[in-house]
Amino acid sequence: MKTEIPYKIYLSEEELPKNWINLRAFMDKKPAPLLNPQTQKPMTEEELSQVFCNELVKQELDDYSPYIPIPTEIRDFYKMYRPAPLIRAYCLEKQLNTPAKIYYKFEGNNTSGSHKLNSAIAQAYYAKKQGLTGVTTETGAGQWGTALSMACSYFGLDCNVYMVKVSYEQKPFRREVMRTYGAKVTPSPSNTTEVGKRILQQFPGTSGSLGCAISEAVEASLSKEGYRYVLGSVLNQVLLHQSVIGLETKAALDKYGVKADIIIGCAGGGSNLGGLIAPFMAEKLQGKADYKFIAVEPASCPTLTRGVYAYDYCDTGKVCPLAKMYTLGSGFIPSANHAGGLRYHGMTTTLSELYHQGLMEARAVEQTEVFKAAEQFARIEGILPAPESSHAIRVAIDEALKCKETGEEKTIVFGLTGTGYFDMVAYEKFHDGKMQDYVPSEEDLQKGLIGLPKIKE
Image 1 (tube, rainbow, N blue to C red):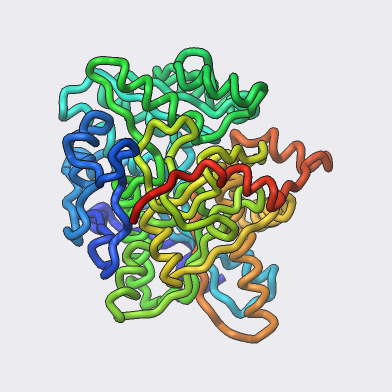
Image 2: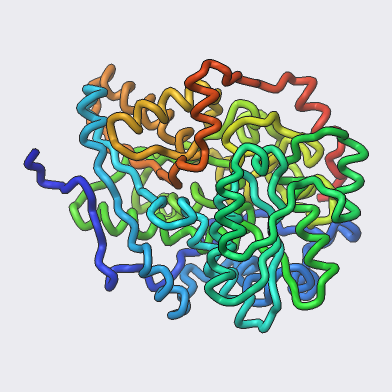
């Protein structure tokens, strides 16, 4: 097939971004600050430095620098798997018989299998530069834990991972990749921390959640000299590192004079979506261009579509700072769906504020429909997508079919955040007809929201 635009658009190493883009710098109304849960005052650099690496704290609190240089050591590591390709989904377009043009940014071309390595290597770099011994973290489906174990191995750091129990059991091979890279992996909630013991007592037999695992990882970091906590999503610093995705995507489109109309990403804590849309949203905020942004989340954990915009704890154990975000309540334990990376009760403050301002949309989709789209995509495009990524695929297909109905030739871009080769239990459940959809009732949601802190704003 002869086309003006190739199937895969690659940038050269020289075109790899030299700076991350800080989306908050382009926002007139900034995201609300993190609050100290005891004093209810904005967290200071000194307070946050007890938990996070010093340089990462500076990035977390920076609302005004539009661009932040990517250190040479991180760019050199990026070159092992970046720039990542932007792929034109010609085969999918043909099957759907749509006038829409569909592109996807593929982030699965590294051993971690996902976009998570973009921030993992940055956080490990700053931890090593600070002279730390190691880091602690949580992981849902395991992509973040895998990426961090790789990054820590590269820099010679200890890595302790608290993996959500249901994913620990569903995805043993991803767990073993972490162990191959030297990480210690503990199913969460566990009896190894005080907060874990409390959660097990309060929710006996729980399958766990990202909120639970965060609590344990933070406690573990505070109890060890020379350790800090690192996080794979939610925080502004992570969106900053993931902006390399959007910067590459925009550069690739610009190379061929293509303008996106609709940009779609799956949304759990918000890191990959925030990274993908960052340069495009910056243009929208400056009035230079207009785009339609769609965040796609599981119907079983409908943070944006059914949550409330309020200050809440970032973790189930209530040991972390308070963040103003769309939330289902830190006590909300999502059902054990197969998109473990999207099972978080809140959404990053940056995306929450943008959504609250009406600058982006949100859709909630059920997992059987997600896996139908995943299977369709795998059969026609040749990549087995991760369950998380497949949420974006579902809505990209839906938008392309709308174009078929209306005859509009819109350009759709979505983030294919990772591969699903360690998610075969989920695919097995789908193929055997054993996968069930779960949509929480209003009563279920209210149970999670009961514990929202009372904040004087």
